[in-house]
Length: 423
Image (tube, rainbow, N blue to C red; front, top):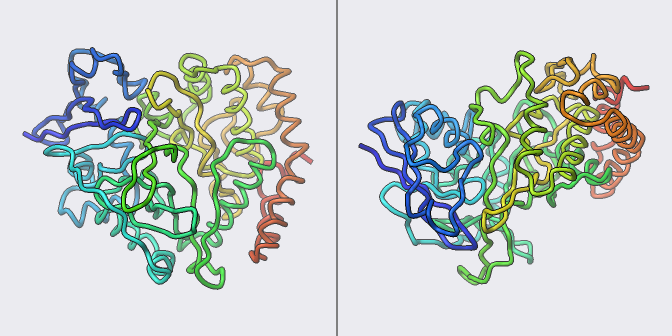
């Protein structure tokens, strides 16, 4: 019988939430700790896992906790290294669960107290950029980091002096660092250009920057995002570095109880409506967060991001878990510049193909999501009117920083994104 303790950080303190138990990953079930449920600080760790005395089903357990794990190549590589089936999320979670997205920690045999930061040399950072997903997956294993998503990424600590550190043991990271993709040219520049454009247009995004350890080629650059689920207002120090507080978050798939493999809407079953219903029912400021959610969906269409699935939208909890808001936007990439499939990740006004989606499609979706036509029209027009100028300013900023390919990338976005057929 396996027993994995599930912990969460509340106001800087690790607290036992419950346990995942079972003979194998196929029958493992999660159950809340009764003391946690009855405590004044207790709160459900997911909207899809409300407090109950009984254990959750194996399916409900897998749906939430498997979404904490990396996907794709990284997951396969980790499974190979620990000699387990790729489907065995329980064993992978036991190996990687110390540092997840959000504030959850998974530990088999109790929480370990060891924590320190290992300073990285410039050469080590350069090797991380050059070696791609294989190196990042090795770091995941070495540091027990579980960072969801399919691309090669690691969690690192970045101090105000510009130095990078590798978190070890229970030490939290401050930034998520991604590598270039062997099949997608200029993916780092692409994401930074999209994020800067989103910021220029008024969308809430975390601070991000390109780490250039060479001549600016794909093998020389990393994409670094400041973690919005970390708060540097902590008071503890490790190795002379201020330790950030972990903030709990869950992506929309987790909150809705939808498995990671179903993050794309393949048939019209109302994902967009479900997203807005989630905000209406659970956000501490549903009016503002509905407006922000609409802006992000429209922006992803304009910039040609067809990979804006349910796991790329999230809820961020307060340090005491008592309130929840829409998180800042993340993982915005113009996938259409790579001739990706034209299908969006969910239906908009009954349409899935980005080439068939336009202003009228969003207005048609208004009734489905519970917004007025006027609100949707006004929001769409405001973003589309500002889009080209915001993109141009972002490209100029990156060009002035030495990334001259930003201009071509800007032109490619204008030719391939949803904005291209609004004219």
